[in-house]
Image 1 (cartoon, rainbow, N blue to C red):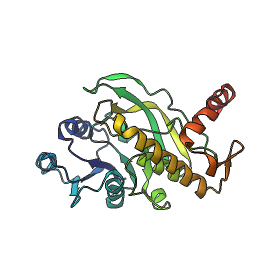
Image 2 (cartoon, helix red, strand yellow; image 1 turned 120 degrees about the horizontal axis):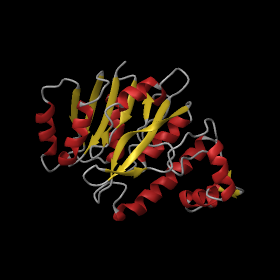
Image 3 (cartoon, one colour; image 1 turned 60 degrees about the vertical axis):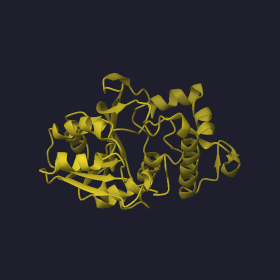
Image 4 (cartoon, helix red, strand yellow; image 1 turned 180 degrees about the horizontal axis):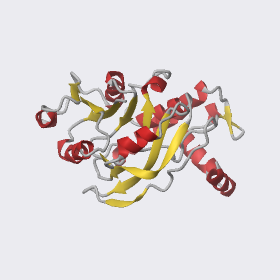
Amino acid sequence: MLFSILIAHYNNYNYFLDCYKSIMSQTYQNFEVVLVDDHSTDGSYEKIRELTKDDSRFRLFQNDENKGVGFTKKRCAELAKGEICGFVDPDDALANNALEISMKNHTENNVVTYSQFHLCDDALKPLRLFQHSRQVKNGNKNFFNIFLEANHFLTFKRSAYENTSGIDQNLTSAVDQDLYLKLYETGNFIFIKEPLYYYRLHEKGVSQESTKKEKLNHNWHQVILNSAKRRNIDTLYGKKIAEIENLPLFLKTKQNNMWTKIMRKFL
């Protein structure tokens, strides 16, 4: 079964070298890499082409102009040929058994697998495990992944993706969360209690730059709002959704009380 590794790239060659090494060391070798470059300006796309030119498993594409992460990730997904797909950011890396373990956990009863992951320093040295990774309750209408419980390394069946409206190409952040919530509505998620992903913490990370956090929160609010509309939810915790100005903050506050913390451990 073919696995499609999806990479949305922009001006990231030096960090990408670690990503590339981790891909090449996979114990599961029946994969393709679909890399879409969002019109890099530093020559990194040309360097990646040279690096991968002798490996037909690497399929490289470039946007005619800078389109943003939503457009680029959507194009990755639409170009994929594998039955199972998973996004890997070009500044991160995979454990060498990430594809193998993920493939083994895909059955006819699920649409997604996801795992624990390492939070790493700039040199990709693990600092700690992300603390919120856990098995989520499937089929919960009020699940919005507010604590990012379902996260890296997340893999999905392409057939499930095709049953959604796809990635929102207009989003400039919260793209993954939008995709995860759409996939959640199509079937079961399976949690792998093993770290399969190395997430690099650095100043230039899209979700880490302070200048982009306000935009991220705005997009995350819209993602949750859209999910609620798809699920025909008008109120949350007794309050009309239309009256809630900051859905991420509202849900974090409501779902972080002691009773909810206890319940999360048993779901």
